[in-house]
Image (tube, rainbow, N blue to C red; front, side, top):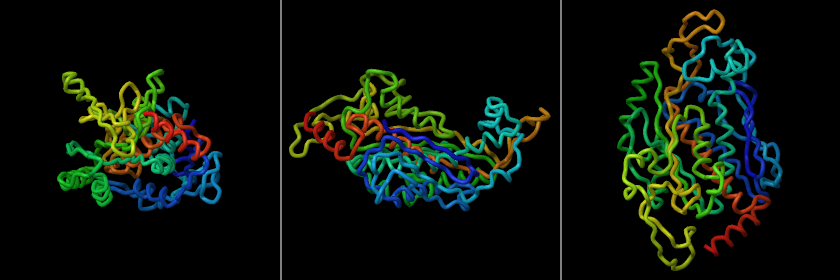
Amino acid sequence: MLYFKTAGESHGKCLIAIIEGFPAGVFIDTPVINDELKRRQGGMGRGGRMQIEDDSVEILCGIRKNTTIGSPLCLMIKNRDHKIDELPAVIRPRPGHADLSGVIKYHEQDARNILERASARETAARVAAGAVAKILLASFGIVVFGYVQGIGGITSDKFLHRKDLDVARAIRDKSPLYCIDQGIEDKIVEKIRQTAEKGDSLGGVIEVITYGLPVGLGSHTQWDLKLDARLAYAVMSIQAIKGVELGMGCNAAKRFGSEVHDEIFYEKPRQNKPVTGGFRRRTNNAGGIEGGISNGEPVVVRAYMKPIPTLKKPLRSVDLLTKEPIAATYERSDVCAVPAASVVCEAMVAFEIARAFLEKFGTDSIDEVRRNYEGYLCNI
């Protein structure tokens, strides 16, 4: 079973991701992981912390000659800004953060002991783990692509086709917002600038599309095996994500069944057998998953991110010690972290897809996985 855990605090010495169940024989190109970490640090609206950190990964164990050996992988990202013992106590909890709930749950008087781990800085370790998963998936022609669909209520309705992926990636990677719709960029940039001047923050919408998946990942047999449920869980676990939907999502509740369900067609393959075995759809309202099982169409996951709860003009709160009214704490923070969150969403989707993929095709070695995968495609 493929899984990972993270450790580390925002201003601690480092962040750690430990990956279990990753197959042996996979070449791990460290610059690929570092490129993903760099993307997470970018995007318009980021705060001063991103000027301090220069995230890069060190793989402490689980590889030999840059190739996995089947034992746990340990990935480390050092924090330059590690001064956790020197930082002041936090006694003014921020609305929308884990501060108050955390101090009550763990019987603390200093929210610093909560926010250091609750911080979205932890997502750097998730991105590293997701990058490893993407390396595995790429060797089977599976591509996971995330981008910003909208920020602050300014949202694109542009639909991304697989044939446009290379162009979309080039546009996204040049965009300060990680958008693929250049028609909305200027409006969003202006809104972020205005929001920064007001001392406020913005949320947005992120879409992650996975191309090249075969039919059959996930299962209908148990609630916790359904691929759509697992993806929703993985993405909802990301800091500040408050809603997740697949395919048409919530809009399906407003339509007739005849407008929602994707009709099935068949076309005999001419040469190489496709991952769908020749079955195809003209629409993808289901988002690539039916009954908890991938159906061969692109898997489309959409995440809704709330605005960052740390504000330069703080909201009202209560002093933890005196219980008197007071303004909430201000920690150095972002105005808008939606572009960065899109990288994290992409990482979490990639890891959960990789987990389902290895459950289906084996986990011990990449040769075993490939043999099982190719045999399965031959029998669709």
